[in-house]
Image (tube, rainbow, N blue to C red):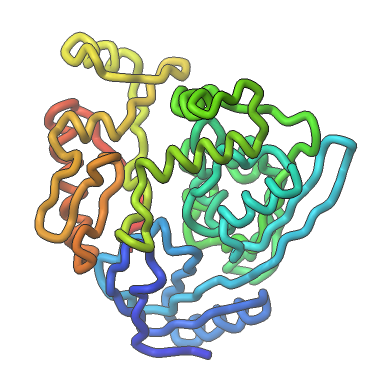
Length: 337
C-alpha cells in the first residue's frame, strides 16, 4: 500500500516531524521491487528506512520512503567452534545480539544495545568498545538498485573503514537484504580492553567474564551515558571521532596537554566527545536542542519539539567551535536529509 503525505515522526529516533510525499512498508524482496518500480514510473527519489536511528530530517522528503521490514534469522554450523548467523535487514540489531547470546554465540557482545536494524550495520561498519562489524562479518546479500538483481558481497568487496563501507561510498546503488556473521560457539575471544568494561566487571567481582558478562557490562555503560530515544529523541553518537596526522596531534598536545588520543600508525584518533566538552558544549541547550549532559557526542531533541533544521544548526555551531579551538573539523556520523 502506498500512502501519501505521510509523517515520518515515528520512523526516526530524533522524533522530528517531517513528511514524505509517498510511503510504503515492504515485507519481502518482491514487494521491495514493486516499490522501486513505482518510484521509477513516477521519477521519484527513494529513501530506505531501517530503525531510523542514523538519520536527521531537516526538511520534508519529496520522494518515496520505503520502510524495510524483512524479518528472519537462520543459523548454520560450519565447524566445532564456528557458526554462521544470517539475519534479514529488518531485524532489530540488539534483538539479534540477544538471540546470539542465548545460543552462546560469541562475537557481537561488545555491540550490545546499539540502536537500529541489521541492514544498516554494514553501511557504516558499526562499532563499539573495541569491536567493529568487519571483525565478525562473513557476507551480505544486496539488491542492486540499477539492475534489480541480487548480489553477494564478501568482506573485501565491502571496503570497510572507520564508520565507512562501499555502501556509503556508493550511496543509493545497493540496498542490503540480509547479513551473515561468523561467530564462535565455544572458544570465544573475550574483548575487555576498554577500561570502562573492566571497571564494570570489577564492580561485579567478575574475573573470568563470559560473553554474557561483557554484554551486560556494555549495556550498563551505554545506559549510564546515552539517553533512551523512546524518551528523549536522539540518534546516538552524532559525530565521528576524528583521525588526524600524528604531527598535528603532537602539536595540539603541546598546547592541550590532557588531549587524549589513540595511535594508529601515522595517525591518531581523538575522541570527539572530549573536543566538544572542552568547547563548553556538554549539557548546553539552545531552545529545543541540547548536547547530552552525560555524553557530549550525543545531541538530543530536548523538548521533543525540535525541527531537524534546529538540530543541524546546533551541530554546525559545535563543528565551528571545535574547528576554531583545535583546528579539527568534526564530521557528522548521522545521515542528513
